[in-house]
Amino acid sequence: MIRVEPQISQRDIVAKTGFDKSTVSSIVSRFFELGLIVRNRNTSENRPGRPSESLSISPNAGLLVGVQIEAQAIAFVVTGLDGIPLATRQQSFDGQIKGLENIVENGIALTLSDCGRGGPILGVGVSFPGLVSTEGVLLHAPVLNWHDIPIFELLRAKISGPLFLGNDGKAAAMAEHMFGICINEDDFIYLFSGSGVGGALFLEGRMYLGANGLAGELGHMKVVPQGRLCSCGASGCLSAYLSEPALTEEIRSITGQPVFSFREVLRRADRADSAVLDVLENAGQVLGSAISSLINIFNPPLVTLGGDMSRAEAFLRPALERTLRRLAHPSILANTRINFSELSALKPYLGGVALALDGVTGLDGAHVLP
Ligand SMILES: [Zn+2]
Image (cartoon, rainbow, N blue to C red; front, side, top):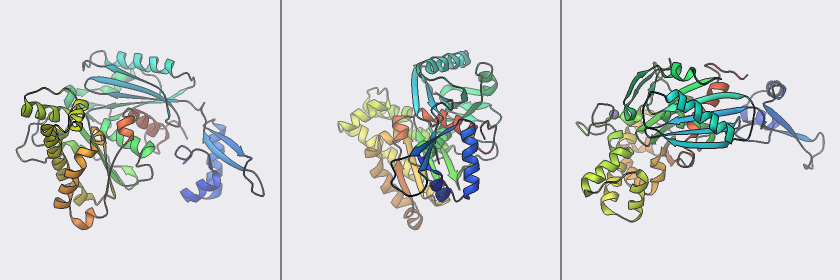
């Protein structure tokens, strides 16, 4: 509550959480003793009685580090305990697992020296475009062609402090729940597109993890029987129609001209290039087909779309909504909002920070803060 609503009063925390006054008071006192929060006197308020007090996260509480590994780039961010970025850094990546631990170690050191603030490192979160098991093994990262890498062990050797690893789609959903438009949402389905398509099921206030932490591979829902080959090895997956490589390859095969990035796809769409508009229209329909199944299965109040999709809302939304009206059950669809995430378009790198913050403040796992 203090992070989400800086300058909140204890009275408002009691009202909004439903916890009793003495519980909130003892937790706040403990946070204050540990130096995690600061108390501010509100003298300007013209109310009788004691001057009210507002609470905010201490700027000296410590630092969180987020690292996002992608197919061709690695991004680093350092934030305070409030999740507000203090320094960011992006560098190209050749996709080789050999030496990754040194690249990550150096990138973190450089970003920390840029951030201009000292203090303990509370946690480091690293997100990967692949399946990360709860045991810390990267089972498969299709876009990097990595299999069965003991990734936790590998990074642990070079990174001191609490280390948390996860899938990038789930990390992005966590970031959306902590810092973005899903902040007060207990139930939502999240889809993220980039070099692949990932996602997460956030159900009844928690991310649904499944038997060994791998649930939520929404990009590999089968949307076209015997359809295109996907990087995961199967065919007909949503990712094979919606990811950046899928869209650029489709445009190249239709027009005979190479397209190198999603940014270029959007530039051409803005110029009303009809081939590109057709490809995005088709992508919107395939997306609508996948989401209609999710809507019928989960009856979610909210579906949030992030990454490249959020940059292409104007081109995807009409076909998506038309398809949903055709395929989803009307009485379920009527109670589902579809929104596009701004956070993931502007600050896609916050996923790693979300993993770190969840790791150090979560009620389960290896938490280091009270
Ligand atoms: Zn697939």
